[in-house]
Image (cartoon, rainbow, N blue to C red; front, side):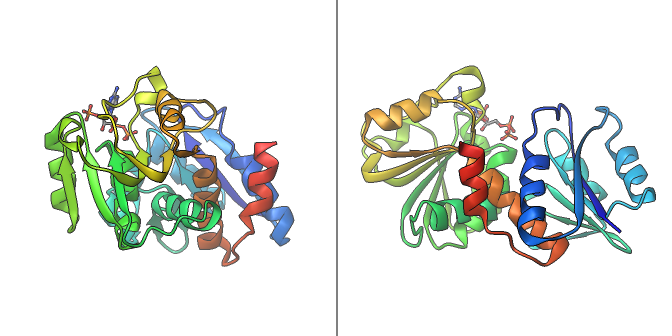
Length: 263
Ligand code: ATR
């Protein structure tokens, strides 16, 4: 029998996850189906309950339900616990919650983009849910992590939750340089740019925007400063591969899938 999976969000119509998991299933020969489901804003828990009753084996969770998914999980991985958010649920006898976003980001940077993070000066911009989701896997690479946020109190709060993170506002970054700068703010949605001081891109820096599908002002700035620029499509596919592995115990080869989605 085909095992069923889904991604739940609101809105969800533009999700690439069904396409990605279809390609993973074809490649690995795993007999699964995967659909996108839009839950009402007040109906996430109900939707999960229904899927379980219908025999689904698990689901991915996206905006705005990752915190509710965290609450709903009866067991959680360490990375879900530290992120305080869940993007992957596995239905067994109980509901297991994991968060594959940070692992997806790190795999994209280290494996696909070939940038080893150990010992590197990494700047994470933003201190919202997206940053909490990736902070622990970033730290586990043994990079030197600074988190900058417009509202500096939120950066300080994030830093206090993770040992070894330095908090900053944007102005205080003046005179410092970073090997990797990651945009985890929502500024790209409104074509805005975090107020980065001049000169923060080190020689050969990688600028990573967790958004995909458009050139953000951050990407343009990074290009103008000679940085290598990446969008979040690779992270999206890597976090999906990690979820697929949690459910199926099989790790898909992401490279051909990244190539297909880029073309
Ligand atoms: P998410 O869950 O996607 O991280 P969020 O919790 O609303 O969303 O957080 C959005 C993040 O983007 C915040 O860090 C926010 O900074 P503030 O906390 O100071 O509001 C950041 N952000 C949004 N627009 C920004 C902009 N134009 N410049 C800099 N940071 C911005």
